[in-house]
Length: 203
Image (cartoon, rainbow, N blue to C red):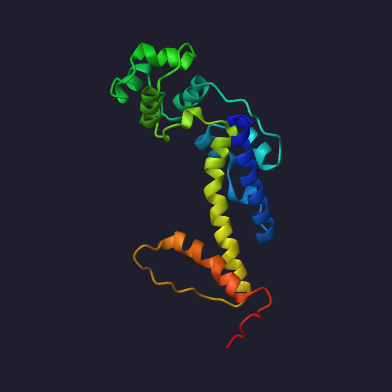
């Protein structure tokens, strides 16, 4: 299996879990996600985002670095709302790449080394490695955290259905805090309650 296929399989799994959770919660992707915002964040076209969320086939072709970089240049604008010039990009990377080098990278004439790629990605405000992500990797990185939040919401809903109205937890050294603690605690509580425990009576 190729790396690209593995990445898209990873998104397929994320999507499947998200579909299941949304069905249980009575929600749909279009109520949670703006495909335009997803496209801006991932570099995947809104049409492709919508198609993938609807269960469409994966595009396993890895886009050229130049295509992803050009997307950033066209969408991450300067304070005047204009595209950064190649000169400004070069300067913004601390001259890790020359003005002519930026032009060659945008045109696809050259491929960057790791340090140059990272400098360009930092300049445009995306995480290092962004320009090398496949469609599946990009979508999984965006949708995955939302699916984890949905999982927590579903577990909370399950607890409420069993009559649990609040959860108090004391943090201790070496233990997770905040959402991580809640996410780790909820499955244990559900298991202890058991599927047949009746809801608590009000009053």
